[in-house]
Image (cartoon, rainbow, N blue to C red; front, side, top):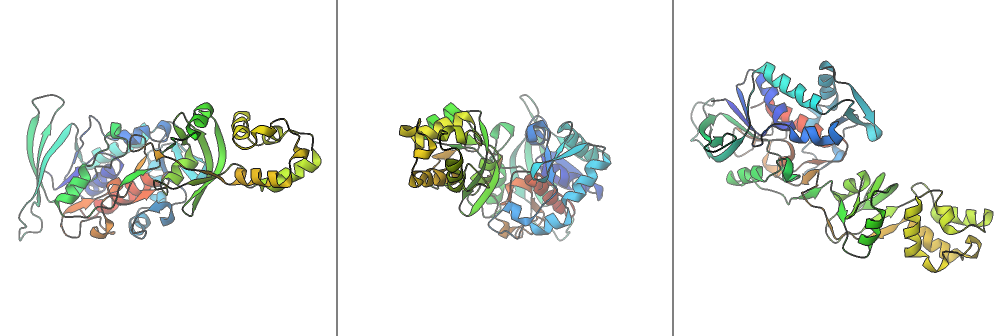
Amino acid sequence: MGEVIVLGGGAAGLMCALTAAQRGRQVLVLEKANKIGKKILMSGGGRCNFTNYSIEPENFLSANPHFCKSALKRYTQWDFIKLVEQHGIDYEERKQQQLFCKDSAKQILAMLVSECEQAGVVIWSHCEINSITALQSSIDAQSNRYKLELARGKSEPKETHTLCCESLVVATGALSIPSMGGSDMGYDIARQFSLQLTERRAGLVPFMFSDNFKAVCERLAGISTEVEVSCNGQDFSESLLFTHRGISGPAILQISSYWHPGDSISLNLLPGIEAYQWLCEVKLAKGKSLLKTVLQQKLSKALVTELQQLWWPTQAETNLAEFTDLQLKTIGAQLNQWTLKPSATEGYRTAEVTLGGVDTDGISSRTMEAKNKPGLFFIGEVLDVSGHLGGFNFQWAWSSGHAAGLYV
């Protein structure tokens, strides 16, 4: 059954399925979970940050930074926005040009399901793939190339099925958020067919600390502040959130994709302000003020209390006028460049993406087909392409899914 079988009913898989079916292809989607689109439904706090007004190749990480360009150019954010508008879904722009549903992420999933149904896509959930076999290539290019053995059903004994297809699309996602169905199945399939994998690690993920700073984070848990964070030549200006385990928030999730174990990160707590110069000016104008009182104009009281304990504990009650220029210079430097060394990230449990994946050197950037295995396609997060926070990973799902859908 099925000229095209798509493994995975997430964003990329559904986009590929509806695109192929609209070309008249017979398409079957096989989903492991009890229902499709779980990550779509949970994303953006249930509002789905489905794309971004500004999509550039620079918003993506890959060992080959050029690989994503072709697909992104041929199915753009404007194409997906047009689809959203055709379905009458209200959306809004938030900061950093991110687009969210005004109402619910359910609308995006319903839109994709509706497009699939209209095009005749068949979707099966509760599917466990037991084996995939490449069939002997035939003279007839339209013949079946892959055989799948699978079990289907909610309870034992499950139905067993043997299916054959001409094109097999791997849209199984990756290791992030296993509770939402994240797995390494796509990597196993890639290995089976002699495709290389790049190193994989958690991305868009909070940091944890094992040193004294962990206690500081625990005391500040729930407090958010605007920062500029930098690591390995990258920097992001967004909010930071203290948690019981460490630090999170958009700025931290973004920089985590550029961090490696052992690296330090630098926080500027006063973005756009040269802290030493500002403190000198305040010292001249309001010398009788306490340093903590001055800093509370810019930062939360609780955060300033922790900084005081760390940086000027013996001068807590000292007037600003009595601080030497050298002392203010040191504190100013720390405010603008606070160096912290995370012990680890929270890992795949909370990571929004998996960095690395199927090596793009073995994949056609135009069709998403494996160069060494005709009829085998890889799309979405399983590939070594990861986007920044802000709708970029969904856009990669739409673009890569559409690219494959035109050729399967």
